[in-house]
View (cartoon, rainbow, N blue to C red):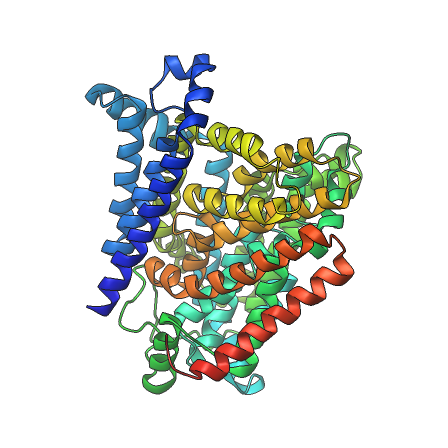
Amino acid sequence: MLRRKRAYLAVTVLMLLTALLFSVCPGIAEEVVEGTETAAKTSPFFMTPWALLPPVIAIALALITKEVYSSLFVGIVVGGLLYSNFNFEGTLLHVFKDGIVASLADEYNVGILIFLVILGIIVMLMNKAGGSAAFGRWASEHIKSRTGAQLATIALGVLIFIDDYFNCLTVGSVMRPVCDKKNISRAKLAYLIDATAAPVCIIAPVSSWAAAVSSYVEDGQGLQLFIRAIPFNFYAILTIVMMIFLAITGLDYGKMAVHEKNAKEKGDIFSGVKHMGEQLSDTANSKGIVFDLIFPIVVLIISCVIGMIYSGGFFSGESFISAFSNSDASVGLMLGSAVTLVITVIYYLIRRVVPFKAMMECIPEGFKSMVPAILILTFAWSLKAMTDSLGAKEFVETMVKMRAQGFAQFLPAIIFLIACFLSFSTGTSWGTFGILIPITLSVFPLEMPLGVVCVSACMAGAVCGDHCSPISDTTIMASAGAQCEHVTHVSTQLPYAISVACVSFVAYLISGFVPNALIALPVAILLMLGTLVVLRKVIGDKAI
């Protein structure tokens, strides 16, 4: 009953915020729609606050029902109804043809899905060969505590900074057996994976995220701006600080405390909610060695890096940095994983740990293990297509330009909040970058310190909203990587993400008046540590 009341309270707050947006912004909506030819050709709801209604409904339903598939689909249908002005035929065509089918026909999306399937197959092969079990045995001997297992997960997540998709699934497949041995809940593992995916990629100059951010800045100064913005990316840095603090002190709160208590005291790492893609085998291949797990992972990392720079034109004469900045993560990860699959099969044949027929049986099994993630991703992409078709990006862009320019010192904090809301509602960080970074640079020249702070606030807010959103592809990937039920992951992670977001907001308020990283970053870290120390003293091991 208490959980249901909390869910209804969260939904009520979400609806009130939406209602506030609708009441505050009608003038903007009218001015935008009156001057837009596209709006007249599509829908009366185009480029109005109503464009944000589909994701709000999807998120609200997910919080109430704890069921993500139907919630996402209802949000998609609402988007179709608004776009077609409640015309039955128009709704059907927009939902399926322009939404689901178009999302699955998109080259980038298909590449990501192929990468997911191949990675699922590779994980199944490693399990069949006994590599995962062997690593679990090795880890149980060398990693002596739950703290050690969590720190090892964090370290691996930080080391794999190339891409968030790759990070989520690779860290998940490697660390699942280790964390299971130490009775770490799947919810906690999913949090650690998610918190070392986007937050690490957004502060790594050599990553697909750096390439994406750099592409939004003209005159080839994107990478330089990205590097200058790293010290002001408070949400990403404070998330890492928080993870290390939680691992060392054992502090847990919110629903996560319940899951961790069940795992520690009862050995129930799922807290009674098992992931539908979970594959538990009673018999492990005794021929497997640790190298059977390490070799495919190392090959995967090398192959994906080569695939990404290949897609950016490295072998056509571009420099490494330029090639990585121009890389296509979808193509690079797809090619890298495909090459890894072939090499892994050949390696296991040479090792004679798995018969060829058994390896071929891993193909459909690996596909099936990724079906939940594929389904949620497809619906999330389709929901994004609905909000795009309703002009949500254009509405937010105009709102920021008209309302935010008069609050220069408060603009970093304002942009952080807007980026959080937009990314949370749409489930995409990169789309948020594309909207807000050009706006920020038009308000503040690149040379101004406050402009760098605002760009960093945009990136941090986008990652924060992405981290919190149940329809975010990275959040979905983290659930798949940990093989944790998706709504469980979202609900247990949310209190932690919100805690970091609150401290980050205060840090951006300070940075608006003192745009100096040598002052603002240490203050932000001290605020985060102080908040965690207070939480530890107030609640101890009790859930709040």
